Length: 254
Image (tube, rainbow, N blue to C red; front, side, top):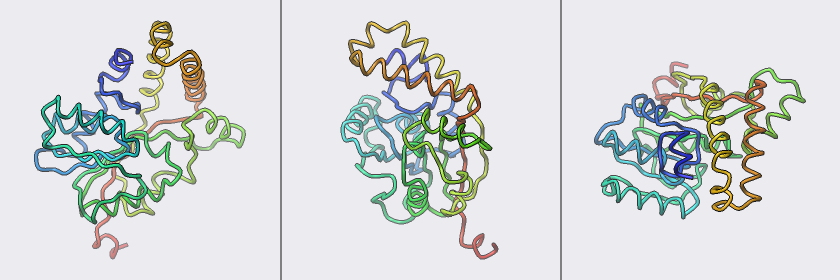
């Protein structure tokens, strides 16, 4: 599994998103991470890319997610990487973050919103805990624009469980107090990663079957094939959004 992750993403954290190492380096730049910056990584899993961002930039990071096992793995990795003092983990739902207002300078989440039913609530929770002038960068998988009802249904069935979104993410960001600074289409890179994954799974069928079990392995292959087919048909897309908090002055001006 780690070998497969290295070949696809360029990391070995046990990541569950499609964020590559190249993307993570870009996220660090976009968030302007450096020593002293307080970063919140929502839906952090086992620490990718939050721990990596802290490791390469010197920032402090809080990893928030619900599965305790993943966070325990992340803390072990933080200790092994020598960044334990700059890393904390909190069991928390992204839609009900248990932090005070204006706690963080930067926020990130990688392919989390497409797995969340309460998308607007999560963006609102992120805005509440963000300081004035804070930046947020996130990736998300979503149905493509201007689909027919039948095409949209295929997209929904082929993507993550809660891939459907009411409207556009840019609108949800505006409604939750964020201002979109940039949005980047990374669908081609997503498709490339999925193809590399499927090739790696095919080559490692025997070993992966022993790790995952025959049924789970088969289900993962079928799921990824369906997702890739939807991407190739233009039904699913993956984007990276860069947003900043809307200040009180900007709200008054509006």
